[in-house]
Length: 104
Ligand SMILES: [Zn+2]
Image 1 (cartoon, rainbow, N blue to C red):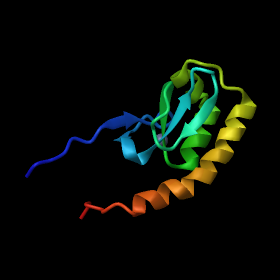
Image 2 (cartoon, rainbow, N blue to C red; image 1 turned 90 degrees about the horizontal axis):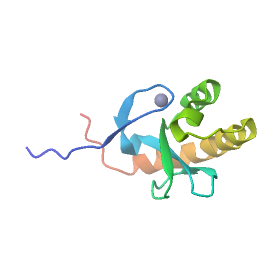
Image 3 (cartoon, protein in one colour; image 1 turned 90 degrees about the vertical axis):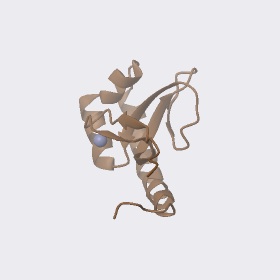
Image 4 (cartoon, rainbow, N blue to C red; image 1 turned 180 degrees about the vertical axis):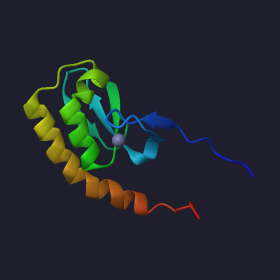
């Protein structure tokens, strides 16, 4: 059986290796904006987080994004990202439900 190689990335908050499509990408653009990049297509330095608000909160608490992006992330940026994260979480989860599951 031919198995497609799934690219793995590490969640910067909980350090777990996860398939890339199960992670939400946060990107620091060349303009130093820090954004959630749902499509994973924006250029810039990226950091990956599990698609869970709990992991975002952990990243916020431990300043994991500062380290991963090599850039100081202000508290208000974290707050803004957290709101965006909550907003995209539903979209992110529902987009995954459209894809065929091959777990069982
Ligand atoms: Zn995580």
